[in-house]
Length: 334
Image 1 (cartoon, rainbow, N blue to C red):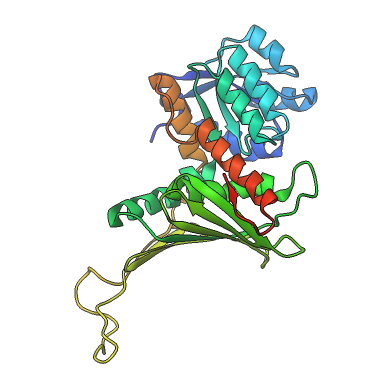
Image 2 (cartoon, one colour; image 1 turned 45 degrees about the vertical axis):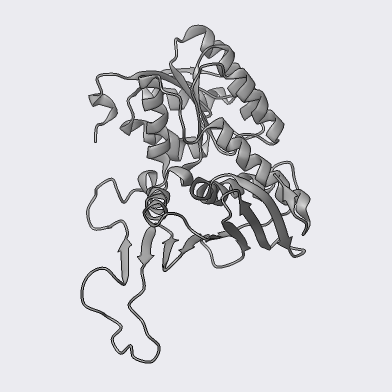
């Protein structure tokens, strides 16, 4: 593990958006990345100036002015999704690589415009769940067993189109990105919900697997859980804990021991510890923020096009999101 001050190669980056989310999560993340923060831009000039002073860089209220005055390798965009399309296209027009927070846009057609304007630039979308250690472990487990039959996600939200930025848009990308990172492309979507927007969004993956995203109510603070089922095994993510259940040799008539000898059966679990001030138990790492941002930086440094968190993947998620709204109980081909 290296820290910003230790990297020999560092990217000159600008940050657009200095609001609460950026200040709590994106700016602290810079400590661990191979970057030099050249500028912070926010339409709130006072907020931009105070934040820039803290990080020892210049401040701007206009992104176009920032591009005119700074030579940037990349930009981190952390504002509302309704502003993402214009800001991403503007960065591309200045030949600047882009990391952009989720959700990528408000409509899928806006993502198609970004893809058309990207040229050979690098763009990574902040789909932290797809980059989380738990998701990576689930991918490893699925690969080990050669596939899976079904995946269940439980997430607290509603499928109600009640505003320009419904909860399904703002937060639905989290469970969708996790499930689609593991399951691959979605062929069709069917949503079955009640008047409150609670119920199930059923995903038919192109590989034949089924995904069920249960839109839940429950206790606060919000919770989430995922389970993947395969032939003779089950893997589960409960918050940050990952477990793999492999069962035991079992015969209904004769089995008397629930703990057979050896280490090839039963449950294995992994979870972050909380007794040492190390990095693996911090939310920036357990939730996937670090992995997604470092991936973007490495792609830019190595001049490698990303294969994870891409605009194309974000577009697939947007199409599933839109299909769920259109479904009303009927199957919608994505």
